[in-house]
Amino acid sequence: MINKYIFLYLLFKARFFLFFGIDPVSKTKIFKDVNLIRVGTGYGSWIITSDVLKKGTVCYCVGAGEDITFDCDLAENYFCNVFTFDPTPRAKKHFEELSLRLKNNKRMKINNKRGHFYKLSKKGLSRIKFLGYGIDEFTGIRKFYAPREKKYVSYSVANLDKNDSFILSEFRRLSEVMKSKKHKSLGVLKLDIEGAEYGVIKSLLEDNLRVKVVALEFDELRRPLNLGFQKRIKKVIRSLIDCGYKLVAVDNVSNYTFVKQNDEE
Image (cartoon, rainbow, N blue to C red; front, side):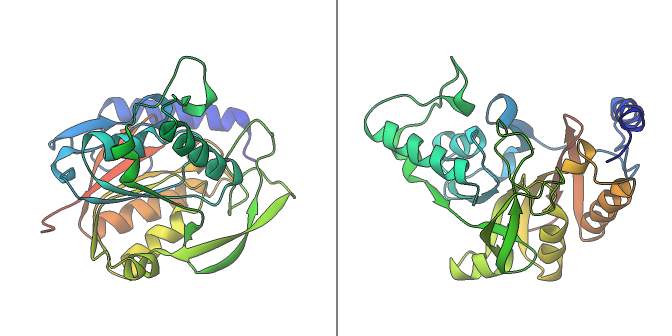
């Protein structure tokens, strides 16, 4: 694990660059000349461009946990067709409980926090499909490592917490999922997958998939495995830019949003 003082220095340096509209990792300019909006609430929100949010837009939200306000907002207020992916046990239980409570006309807490409730109707819920497998670079059964502290929800293929405890979970390559569901393109791909984002982006670009907005969290910016984390992140950013994506937002240090340029629907 990286020394905490080095990490605090890097965090301070990151905020300095962001103040001037520069990505601290790749030194790329952040272009804010698009119609950016925040979708979702609080912890589970993401910044994306409103241009892509049309009725029937297909959105893949990979990584759910116990806060799917982003997914719900897309379905409820923008009438998108949302597919939520997460093999994490508590994530599946959370969605099942949300569905049950809505059907019984009861409110559901966001992230199990007092006073914070989902704003979702039954019609909105019908536009969300939860799939209990993950998205990764390769299709197959993978070790899915548990968080070190039981109060946390998210498991990790990359084993960010260096934990020996794991479950075996199913993962599929993005292109295979899109093909099976006959989705020729995606409006939004959100990745909050605890270190597995590198492989998914690699597969997206290798398979030349049509995805208008990519919103992803680089988890290593908060929990780096080693000092090579910036090199890994920079490589992904540069690969997206080289394939026609523009960096339009860096939110809360680790959440990045990219928009594909000149990509006709």
